[in-house]
Image 1 (cartoon, one colour):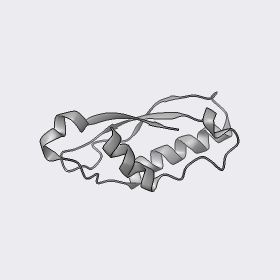
Image 2: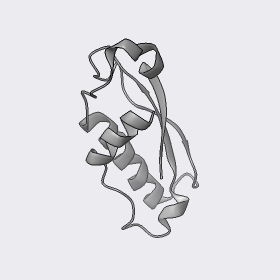
Image 3: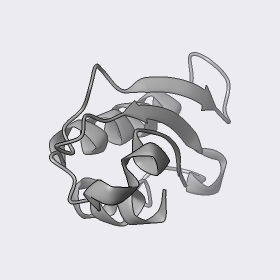
Image 4: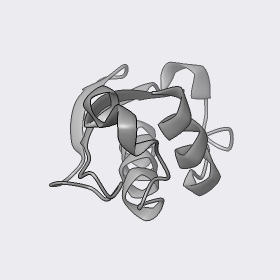
Length: 91
């Protein structure tokens, strides 16, 4: 997860410009193909703010965009079983 998150952070427009960013945690599930590209779409797993909160929606959109934008991920082929599916927390 750490190696993927490090790559995603390059593409992530963080949420420091939003009110109370510490409450805007977004968790996504990413399934990857052996070449480091997405195998399907990024899935929202959870969020730490109420539904309908427009700032939470911005945080979700930024997390999903980062996961999509940064592919293909550069990952060790020998460890595919370890990173084929990962859960990422954006904070």
